[in-house]
Image (cartoon, rainbow, N blue to C red; front, side, top):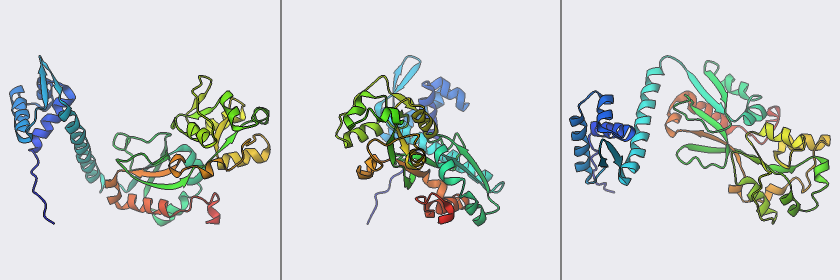
Amino acid sequence: MSHRSFRLPPLNALRVFHAVVRRKSFRAAADELLVSPQAVSHQIKLLEDTLGITLFERKGRVVEPTEQAILLAHYIQAGFDEFEEGVRRVSKVGARNRINVNVSPYFATRYLLDRIARFRETMPDVDLRLTTMVELPDFAAADVDVAIQWGFGTWSRYDQVLLVRDLKIICCTPELGARLKEPGDLVGETLLQPVLSEELWPNVLRHLGVEPRLSHSDIRIQDAATMRRATLAGLGVGLLSEIDAEEDLKSGKLVAPFGMDVMHSMAEQEIPGFYLVLPKAHRRMKPIAAFCSWVEKENWLVSDPAEH
C-alpha cells in the first residue's frame, strides 16, 4: 500500500502559532519568545500560506483564532505536551527508578493496599509512590505515571483497561426502607448522587421502570466512603459498592429494599468500574509497563488477596 507523503509546517512556525493562540496578541507572543512582532507576523503568514487557510482575525491589538485555528491549537498543544513529557522523562531516567501511581481512594483501601507487597516482590528496587484522588489527575501537571480510577471508560485519549466492575446495591436505613414498597417510591425520597456520574441513578431508575426526576432534595457526594456514611446516617438512599453494602446489610444497619442484584442485569456500558488509565507513551517505560502488567493480571474479583 502506498502512502502519499505529507510535509509538516516548520516547527518554529507552529511554536509561534502556539504562543499567539495562548497570548491572543502578536506583541505578547513576541515578548514571550524574545523576538520582534514582525518576526511573529512573518511566521504566522508562513504557516497560513503553507496550510492555505486564515488562522487569525485581527481586531485592533487583539487577534482572535478562526475555527480552523482553534482545532489546530488543540493538536499543537497535545504535541508540545508530548515533547515536554518526553524531555522530562529522558532527563530523569538515569536519576531514579520511580513510578508515580494515583489511585481512587476506594480502590486503594479496598483492593490495592493489601496486594501491593506482591508487586514489590517482583521489583524490590522500584521507587513506588502512591497518591489518591477521586478524579482522574492531569498526568503531566501532577507528575503521575499511571492512574486507577472509577468511571465508565470514557477517557478516549488515554490507554484504559477495565480491572473490575463496581456493581452497586440500593441501600438505606431500615426506617427509610419501610417506606419503599416498590421502585416508584424512590421518586419521593432523597437520592444520594455520586458527583462523578450524573447518569448512574437515572440509569438505575430506568432499569427499574421508573422515570427519573430532578430534585433539589438530592445530595451530591464526592466519594464512596462519604456515600456510605451518609447512607448509614439516614440522609437518603445510596448506591453502595457490594463490598461495603454486604457488611452493613449483614449487621442490619442497612437494608436493600429491591434486592442485591439490581445492577447485574443492566447494560455493561451503564455499570461503572475501576480502570487502569495512562497516556499510551508511558507504557514504553519499563517500570511502568511492569506495574501495568501486574495490575492487569491480578484477579480483582477476589476480595481477599490470600485467596488468589
